[in-house]
Length: 171
Length: 171
Image (cartoon, each protein chain N blue to C red):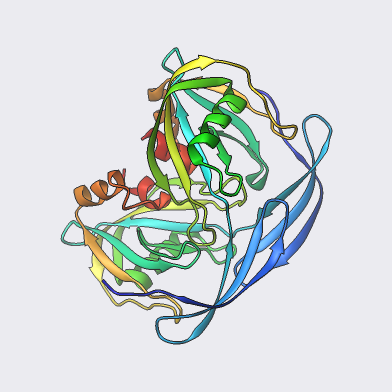
């Protein structure tokens, strides 16, 4: 297989905000030419499929400002830099939907936006849940939507559920 | 269902590069508080599953600078602002893998990164392909990897194929 690696020539932080860290790099292409690559440095994130005590999927509904829509998703959260993904997922399970899981299984890693971000997500399955309390952040608003697996799959085929991590988690 | 909409108070372009357009908005939360939302304005993108004349899937392998890895993916491309998605997909089919499709079907829309980007992707199925020639951009290097559907699904279950649009397209 061909080596098409692009080697970093220089790297510059062009915007560092509260959430986004934007880099602009000069790279050497496989043909020796120089090109620009703009990308987002991301700490990574977790998401998980929670199987509620009544066997429904604990989907959540929240407003996503970037796309200006309410979205139905599996719960997710961004890692604090260097955080252990499984610990983060267990914390989010309790904070976002108010459960602890006796059984927590890693399913796979996924890359959501390789064209412009280095984000990697850890996808888990959370089972044997025990009720605790939600602890939402001040600027976090969400609704828990317990949904049968077959209904959530229908929402994918109908185009009502378009969030990629959720589709990958459910199919 | 609750209305959790966040209303835009002010919006500012904080970085405008060749590829990335970064906004920083002040929004009013459902509880009346003001919060900051940073996000990427994206023109949208297309991707498609090409069924080659020998019935294999026309996967491609390319280096993705943001994650510093060679990745195996279905072909994809960013829309020029306002471009018709199907026209863009047909153009990319010819440019990236060198085929025209007699049959081009829309499968679904997906949102890859709703936490920080408004990108929406149009996913298609390209069938009954007729060979033409590839026309790659100067800074585009890729390899076509014709793969049996069952082998590409195994690559998902083995964690060798982690790109979300590709997983959604194949499952």
